[in-house]
Image (cartoon, rainbow, N blue to C red; front, side, top):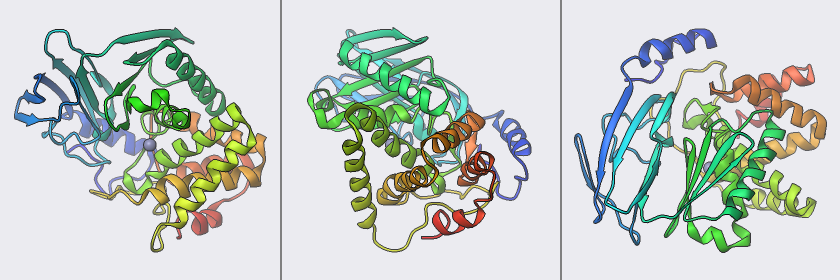
Length: 341
Ligand SMILES: [Zn+2]
């Protein structure tokens, strides 16, 4: 078991030490052989994936091909993944993940893809079945995220795999995206949303799904922020209206996250509705932006991201960033707005 044990965690330093100690047995080396008919074999693995055209891919649910790793959002493991693919096929994947990472951020894809590459700002942007145009846009988005968060794109190479059918899934250094997005002006969101997860998810890792809004609420908020920069204030307000209507559709009273800093992880925490993690999370950031004004809000964002890069985070870490920048307590605000429905 590689997760943190409840009750063991007192300070961030102790927590980091526990992760290191417990982590020693959690490195995984996996070789998978992908066949043309979608069959995937490996040590203890013999499963069949759907074949979309001549493409096979897997993201998020690692249980099928990585059965030795417990599928828990609080789990942390490294991965060395090798894919053996049919002649003429290209592959992409989370081949070398050296930072302890939640397994839902592992993915791979194999198939007859064309590969396009762009070097920009010290990073390599790769598209499988994409184009230079897509890569230029992605590089501009990465620049925008860097400016707003104060943190460079946390991976050296970022690969977008454009697949037949539906997909919108982030992973370490990559994303699986449905190819329809390539020709749809309204699909701008999926590029920035999945890219934002390299900051919110891959670098700053929510402790478990109970604080998943720190991944999804931030990625959703950055869709609005990017569209505002690209198309103006009305585009941002249209996103805010979308978040409001989605949040209102959620039945029952739900809070954004449980309190505590640090707090023990919730074993097998379950995903909350998207109306909460994505929409209510983004709305909370929007309301802070309105209250604090541009300069202070983005200063909080930069403080939160640069202070917590490479770490596990809970809502309490975001509160600390707010307190550091504004010089006042946010305990009562969080009790009402984050920890209560
Ligand atoms: Zn997302």
